Length: 135
Image (cartoon, rainbow, N blue to C red):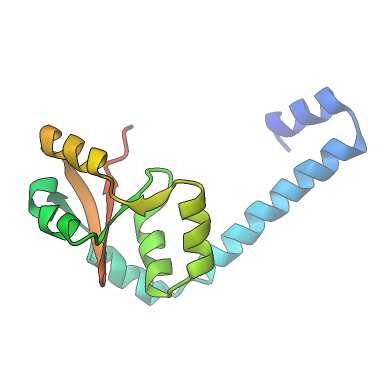
């Protein structure tokens, strides 16, 4: 399986740990299946609509309350897809885990001072924004 599997089995050394590992493997497979079932045409269309834009140009959308921050660990295009599909349960899960939410005043101030460029995509009425991932 791999080093993580071996470490977990050796540390716990029991059936329980094998069950936990299998649970995580099946959870990952389920997510992969969900992602493969996503409408490829819609994803491609959303991907072509993403663009980098300066925060300065986005301030008027922020003023209307329509800017949504997407955490760097999420895929901006996938989040936009679920917004387009109005998948309220998935969106709520991300919001509850603070991976998604309206842009705060503090974020807006920081981005203004930094003259930040952000990745963006519009799913009316929302403008989804994500900082560039640091490598």
